[in-house]
Amino acid sequence: MGHLESITSPQDLRGLSDEQLTELAAEIRDLMIRTVATNSGHLGPNLGVVELTLAIHRVFESPHDRVVFDTGHQSYVHKLVTGRREAFGTLRKEGGVSGYPSQAESEHDIVENSHASTALSYADGLAKAYAIQGQDRHVVAVIGDGALTGGMAWEALNNIAINPQSRLVIVVNDNGRSYTPTIGGLATALTTLRTDPQYERVLEVVKRRLNAVPGIGHAAYDALHAVKKGMKDALAPQGLFEDLGLKYVGPVDGHDRAAMENALGRAKRFGGPVIVHAITRKGYGYDPAERHEADQFHAPGPFDVQTGAEKPKGRIWTDHFSDAIVEVGERRKDVVAITAAMMHPVGLDTFAARFPERTFDVGIAEQHATTSAAGLAMGGLHPVFAVYATFLNRAFDQVLMDCALHRCGVTFVLDRSGVTGDDGASHNGMWDMSILQVVPGLRLAAPRDVTRLRELLDEAVDVSDAPTVVRFPKGPPPEDIDTIEKAGGADVLVRTGEQDVLVVAVGSMCTVAVDVAARLTAQGIGVTVVDPRWVKPVDPAIVELARRHKLVVSVEDNGRVGGCGATLLQTLNDAGVTTPFRLHGIPQEFLDHAKRDVILARIGLDAQTIARGIVEDVTAHDDGRVSVDAHQPG
Image (cartoon, rainbow, N blue to C red; front, side):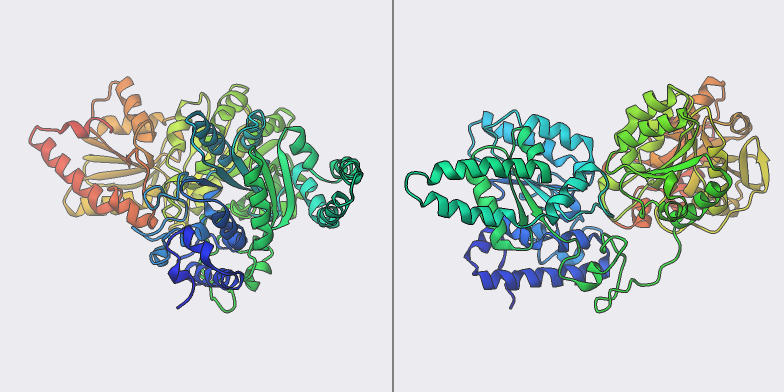
């Protein structure tokens, strides 16, 4: 029986010897490697925080003391020592352990998001709340150096610093990487500190010896400390943090558990906000991960445990975008690319290799990326900002006021749109088409297949007087669906029988809509399936098609409220079209993690469910009755 099997809460860690804790760390790494090899997930970040997490839970008393992770993908070790070992094999599976902290899973989890640079703000609020209520509780915020490239983290630090009594410990997990090497001035400063000689250890020895000298020892040490402060201001960011009013401890080897416990213990006793700077290595303890140049196995798919070789997988939407944007770059010398610390995940690595001088990684700073893109457009270039759909939410004001208001030709490419599945609620890109509907002048495209992805990307970068958006889902694209005829700018994909039902399918839902059409045709129902291609603005040709059909059905992988279907219905009402309407989209709720197809079936975005509802509506219409749901979204 291993040590991990006896750990049901963090309290159990305090009874283990140093040797047992070393053995426990090895067990934890082994279990994480074997689990992620089968289930996929975030491996590299968690391998890097094993000793750090053990130290936190031995020094602090969770859940009385609160531990907040930024981002939550580095919480696997935390889950294993807070009572979830037995269920860990269900990681990221439907009904199983989430890939992020989850309040529903454990009282030890309080913040369950995957959006970076937020933990310090949560921690600031928690610490203030406990102080106001007179509660003797600490808050520990674990934040990576990558997340410190986000502006929100510095807004939080500015506020944390003005509350000197805050019982808040900030652990900077400095591995020099977010997904890939961390970009920016702070990263350079931290690198300087990481490579500096071990002056902290030397000065500790000097301090002990000088303080032991009667009479003059303390004064001599104070003078030396002033010199040390000057040296560190020149060499490291300690000066930056201490100028803000924050006590700085470090750097500490994050893989030396005893050293981490010592540093955290000192920070805990200080009684005010403290930054503990831990140096770690992403993928630590698993050779294939440490040698993986791209991202140290940040989030691998299934792989062979012995060799680290990922199992073969087909090309995904991102790969096809990666090829297409390089072709655009070859043709258009004014096109530049922007990423927010996700060069490989969004497929811009090939563009960066071909056009390094035209590629900008701004760190985890989506707001800055968007307004910087507006500036690039004002300067005569056409920027393409590739970002996960869920992360564009963070830059809505910049899209609205900085890009659209100034009619800037900026193209946003939204990867992982719609239901993403395994990563849970915070990763689903189900908000973008609702949020962006309200932006004047913005044009939004949703390609149904790879051919349309290339076409629409080409069309998007040709727009110079407004922001454009091209969005596509996670995973492999479907086979191309040919166009049988055009209706305005839209593609007609199916036309059979009478003009009974018009199905307006958005992007990746076109494949489902074609399946729906086959089912309806088998029932003797005439059906037309149309792909708008550009879903904003609404194509007038679709309005006329709707006028001629007996029932209009919209299908999208976006929230029902304010999305493409709701906008189409409003447009039809404005045009005096009274054709009954049925809207299919994602319910406005946070979706539990599961595979994409499982979630789509669960929420009724599968062909069988949609076709059954249409048959019921057509039957009701033939009887002179139409349900209220057929008219209104939501």
